[in-house]
Image (cartoon, rainbow, N blue to C red):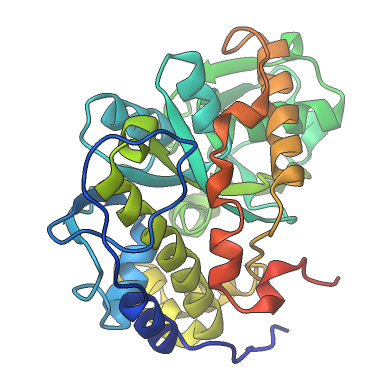
Length: 347
């Protein structure tokens, strides 16, 4: 059972954040070796796609008190869609898993990771089509698996097959955007696909009585990252906004952990449209937030992912994972949260 930890309250932390610093920087181009700014120039606008942070800010009354203007909170979440938005200059900051930056690198989109959150427990399950005979990972042989190579779900599939000792030639990987998985499962165009909450709950509520089920996988999608196009980080005003948003992102996450009832209602019930009972059940599966002070392990995990996807024939040749990270931000999120969230949760 989770223990509610009373650390720095979100409103208090936000007040400290919003009032800190008085110096401003002139807008203009900077290089990625420059130090991070200490405050945001007046009039700075950014477009942010991090729905969980938006909901937390709205629930705490902080949405309109940020030290910059959010010109848009677009509902762009899937990695390939975020990359396209980055490419078109329509999005400045987004939160994804570790694989989209690898995909971006392979397709010539220059972007950097500026925030890292680490998890150690499986977030995804493999969910079957109705009336499926799949009951265990060994049953995956010969099956059609929904596969999105540029998203976390693709890595989950590859790591699952690797763990189960099943070769890529023993399954049929059906390449789809993860947003297409539900339709493909419902229509039995695929046999199984990786889903996370609350999609698992929603899908099984509709098709569980028709034989759809969730199969556990040991594959862990270890990283939740905040990232931005390099061009955004070269603009001193937007860099300042991103710097402040990294702190807000981490603190909003801590608020959601420390206020489970408020978060359950604001996010799962009102925003994601699941029942209060299902929301409470989902929350019991969420592990305590962990924002590492040092990114070495995150970079190692990202390198393992790069090697896995490139060896499997996706995204060209392997490369140094360190190139994806802007290490000026390395301690920023960790320093923004209470000390207990800078270490791994004891099992």
